Amino acid sequence: MEELTEVGLQNFFSLFLLLAAVAEVEDVASHVLDLLNFLKPSFITSQRALIWKGHMAFLLMYAEKNLDIGVLAEKFSCAFREKAKEFLVSKNEEMVQRQTMWTLLSIYIDGVQEVFETSYCLYPSHEKLLNDGFSMLLRACRESELRTVLSFLQAVLARIRLSLSVKLMCEYKLQN
Image (cartoon, rainbow, N blue to C red; front, top):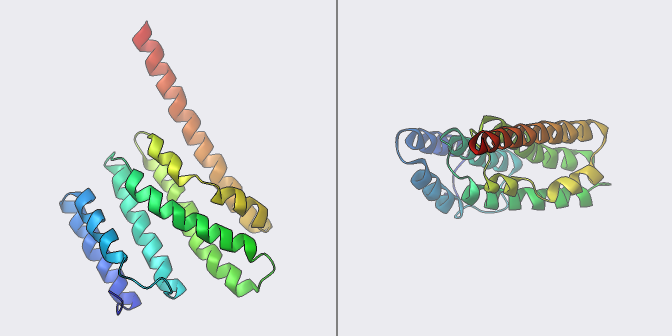
């Protein structure tokens, strides 16, 4: 695992995503997470971005199959929180390093928005994807980055509001 190149990592995720599409996605995702634990934490950014995209692809598969995303969401949201903390601390660092961190953060933001929008039902585990990393981002972002975060928050809140409205209507109909 440690010797995988960027192409090798792409092939790794392609293989396991294909397997997850035809087999039990929970079992496949579990094995992938176990294998990813063998990777060095000091990967170059392009490889780290591939890992985040792969993780997000599994989250989306869970959402599309209406499965509880809790196990995947917890680990991934912790990585997001840590990256957001780094981003907050790096407020005055060089632009290239901030852009590198923003690449990972935007993968998470875009992916989580898609998870919320494609989920048939919102479960309590969806909340795990929304952590205090977002409050750190709000303090650390520049104008263009802030627009992205605020747009994300607006879309997620609209989805939560819709989900609550549907739930309340169903409960009302059951009572009457």
